[in-house]
Length: 131
Image (tube, rainbow, N blue to C red; front, side, top):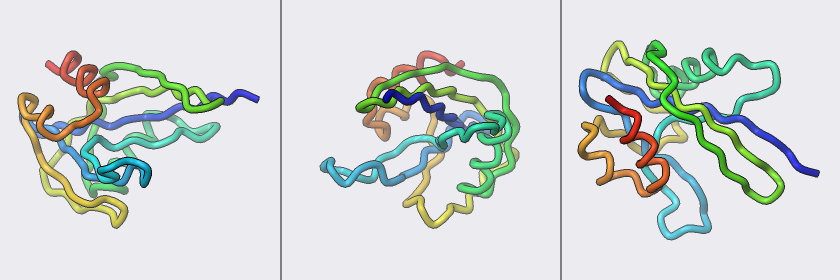
């Protein structure tokens, strides 16, 4: 049986910097904690716009507004296909209060994203779509 899931990603911007979060990804890789952006699985009946804003506030304490959708992506794991929607969100402040499941944060300019982000496909998508 095949499944289809949707993810939302929040790319948080404040002035000319973007919020990167250090989060656990997988015990089966050399570096299980990696830098990335907020993301969450969309549950049936949820509004993706509302979800991305609520997960940003829940995980970082940041009040944000959606600026625009930047890009979409897809990948397959086993019998599950994921479709992702990446939102650019403007933060009202650069003060971050991390939830317990996150391991660190950095505000980074666009030119330095490649220093932190190991996922090259995501990095290419982000850099290509940011102003």
